[in-house]
Amino acid sequence: MNDCLFCKIIAGDIPSKKVYEDELCFAFYDISPMAPMHFLVVPKLHLASCAEITADNAAVVGHIFAVIAKLAKELDFADGYRVVTNCGELAGQTVKHLHFHVLSGKQLGSFD
Ligand code: AMP
Ligand code: ZN
Image (cartoon, rainbow, N blue to C red; front, side, top):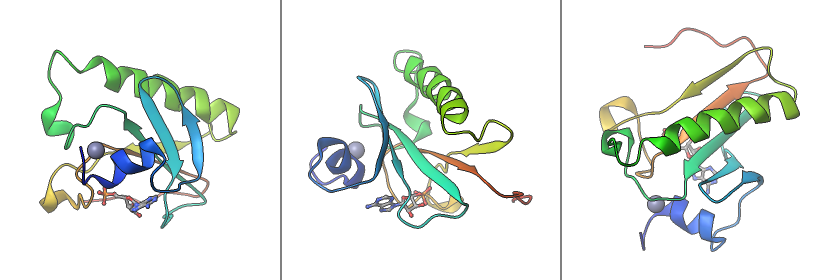
């Protein structure tokens, strides 16, 4: 999508600190980290949020979770981490391209 920040990051038009990339997804460190380890994993397919997940495109979500489990071992945070996606403005979603926050490296608190 033309004016989507995360599509521009995937395309390399906006710089990011890349963690991982394959044919289906792209992972990069969050610019404003909330934990010592905080990166985002996004599908290369533009979906505005998890509200746009359907039976036809849901496989990418399983793929992303498998990638996160692999990265947890490789980057040594498999002892504990949180995966979060915000869906819609009421949930605090600010970038309208589906993304999964991966947070680790400290004791994470409870949330709303
Ligand atoms: P959300 O509030 O769930 O939509 O999350 C959006 C996240 O994107 C926030 O944690 C931001 O810090 C992060 N973010 C915004 N712009 C960039 C960027 N250029 N590079 C990396 N992360 C970004
Ligand atoms: Zn996008």
